[in-house]
Length: 302
Length: 324
Image (tube, rainbow over all chains, first blue to last red; front, top):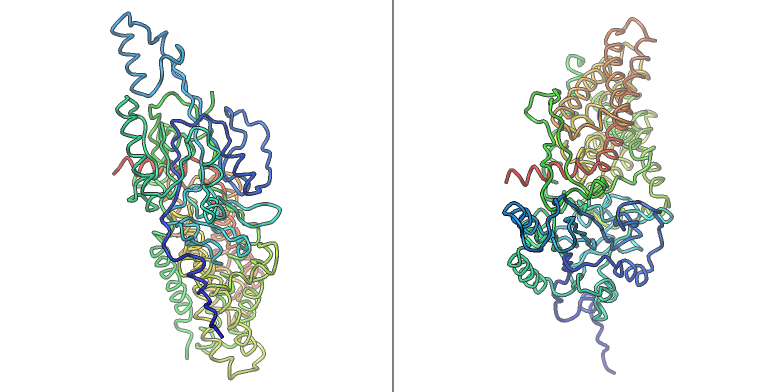
């Protein structure tokens, strides 16, 4: 009789070798706004439709990330008055200076004489190193996977909605008809079969890049350097820095404007960082209440 | 051209949100520029909580403070007041779980709260605090009101008072520990405001149920709590500066105004009618209870309004980056 070796649940689910931390690098400088990521995400994850109607906000009718939208493409049309400046031979120092100023701002004079640029960016859950949603989840439904991504277990979530107000990016939301909270899983199911997430696979310009986070960070640094060399001083990385308020993002971005222009918070902080202070304040409140109650009986005894 | 489409990469504004240290309440003559945003859309999500949650803040707070009041009355030998306060504590605490269950939609989902104890989640800690309150209040009130089950009733009364105090204030941590600016930036004032509010409503409820000659401590607690609630709320509004604007507009503004009027008026009426007019005392107590309820609603609605305003999220963050 041979003894059957039963693998421990931990070893079986996490494998013999530790997995590298994976994530997304979304390089918005090459996003063309095709929304293939939104569609691929919806199809693969069977995310229900949610029709927002016509918003009039450029080509963005899907509005924001939420329970039924785990990738969202932002469209921003920017235009400045340039007074007939073009990239043809400058006819005066004033015109040349104006043209140079536009180039410095990342505007392309050759896109016409109107100083127009169109920013597009595919937003997604940031899979924070310090995830407030995970910290505040009272059921343990939100957990960190072996890939260090942040996932909501749909059979454990009880719809308490705490993560909704804890997320500094407004990523998570409640699905109205079922009451539970849903968000990007970084295609946890696909990762376990060595496939890249649906959005990254569908992206035709490699604006969404998937891979081990260390590699993505190096790649992003090189890309940023190249853009700066080419005069795109406005290019910046968002969420690359592990010293930020959430310990760095697992899904970070290269942006061409300030984060707030894309609807992203410029300096997000995981609310859990101030948890001790919050409890200290509640402790003071409880002690004050006890003192007030005891004080109300002064002179009563005897 | 829309909000989000403001001219080329040049940063348009540097908003100064938060009028701290600029002489409270005074408005600058120069209107502050709004921070940039994406078509004026919110950055963070508003709470999905329904009416049960602010009501629970009230019932839990009143119940928890009443348990502590009842225990103190027992210790002081004021049996009549203790009886009333145990009744209020039992009513407040037993009304709370159904409210939370109702908010979740499906009752069975509440059991998932009991899967884990998570110190990083004020809601998990709070669920266990509420559970402890529920377990303690039944024998405590049974002994306090009916005089039965003294063997477990006596220790349960002490336990009930001990877990009642955090029940009255943890809900402030629950909201402060969030990305909602008007809540998270009020982390120091909210628990004191909630504690005062709980003292006011617990004292007021016990005053109504107790003959005037035994109700003096409850009256004092109600009036003292009302003063603390009003003062802490006032400090909160001033310290929040522009971030606190929800307390001056819309639904939250109306509730905040009602809370202040009812609390101050109720405290004055209750103070003036000591031993003279029973009707006046009852009316004053009713005003304090309503004021306490309005205060919780004002805080809740202010959170909804604050989360919906992108400049409340972006402004202070930009300012912080500018300072670094």
